[in-house]
Length: 467
Image (tube, rainbow, N blue to C red; front, side, top):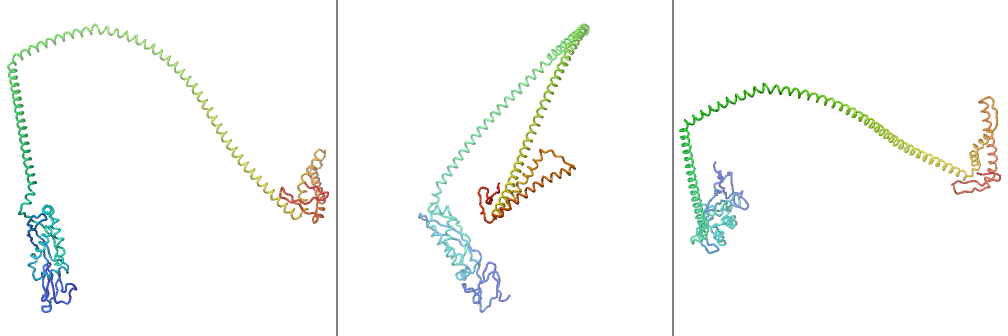
């Protein structure tokens, strides 16, 4: 499109003369997309952001004074941030083709300064450290230039003085010595293996010859055995004939012996066996009868013994069971008696506590009445207390008398009614005789308080008896 500029993915579009510019860059930076560029008012330039490579070949002097030629390669590029792009544009926009040369010179200067503080041994052993120190030393300058260093590799170290070769000489000599020693050991092992192989070969040849001699002996023996086969066969035939004749004689002797055994020995043995069998049967019969009688006697004795033992055991079990039951009953009775006594004691104690409480309350009531001056009430209570005694005395007077009761139960009721009436009349007479003086002296006689039971008693009146 006309007036539309689009940077490549590895490029940055720098537009000067635009109002939309950064405060630090003073110009507009476009990456990754396009924009309009006015041909007269604005000017557009492209800055490459691709990776670049700078070769460094520099002669340096170490801290030991050894001159070395170092060859290295540095991979770098312009940073992707706007500040790095602006710094690189101000310095390299017109000289982008010389950027590798300029950056290589900066790296060369830092490489000389850092190698001047190291020894040859350190440079050889620690190349990564050397590269890292070069990168760290040039970081500030590269940041000002807008350059980002991706890697720095030391490729080659050349020594014109031969110092490195001299350093390597002892190690090379040691390696050569070890190589010669290894070769000698290999030769020795090879010789030893050859000797072992020769010994094994000689042993194999010996075993082969021995086996061949054995085979030859077996062959000769077979030949000799074949030569003697005819006479040996004749002798074997004669031997077989003799063997057969011997067998015939043995069979005839066996036949004679069997005839003697069947005709003489076996009938005699049968008679003897019959006699021994009859004698053994009689002996076994007597023995069986004797054993049966003895067994019967032993069985009876065992039965009697078992009966006695069973009866004794039953009696003992009975006594043991009765004793256990009696002991259990005694324990149960004792426990019941103890429980009853405990309940009886609890009831007695409760009854005594109740009676004592009632008596104490009665005493308190009497004391309150006495305190209020109720002499007549006290006298009446005394009379009530002695009334049963009066009736009992009247009844005792009639106990020894000979009375004739008429009308049955009605007459007996009348007698009892008369006795009770006498008691009531006596009670009424005593009450009147006691209450009159008490009321007469109620205002004049002071009350006395007696300690001991906590109750107050009136002063005794003349002619009256107080219990």
